[in-house]
Image (tube, rainbow, N blue to C red; front, side):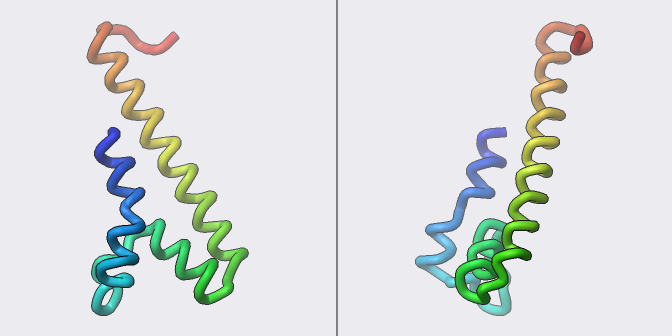
Length: 78
């Protein structure tokens, strides 16, 4: 899970090396939010995408934690 979260945080490398790459091939969601909010000045859309991103990461983390808990103990969450 930590590897997945760190993959979503790869903003600096993409910004410095490729600026999103040819035709957006190396653009990640975090870089897309940056482009929307700070380059295209579509702050509302960038905020909405950020909230959806937060919800997605929260749900994925919760599923992962439940799976690991079940695997470790053999029970369900109470």
